Length: 22
Image (cartoon, rainbow, N blue to C red; front, top):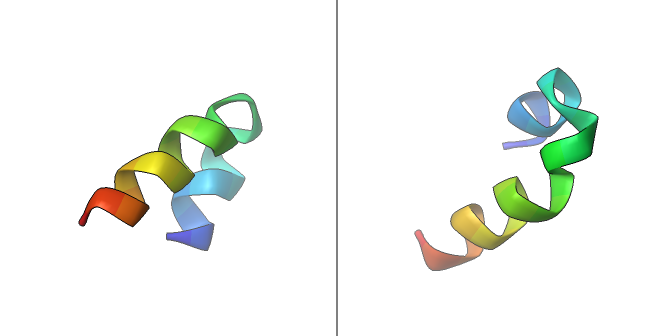
C-alpha cells in the first residue's frame, strides 16, 4: 500500500482509509 501512497502523495489519506477498510 505504501507504493500506492507514493504514487499519489495527495491521496495519502484516501489510500490509507481504503487500506484500512480492506
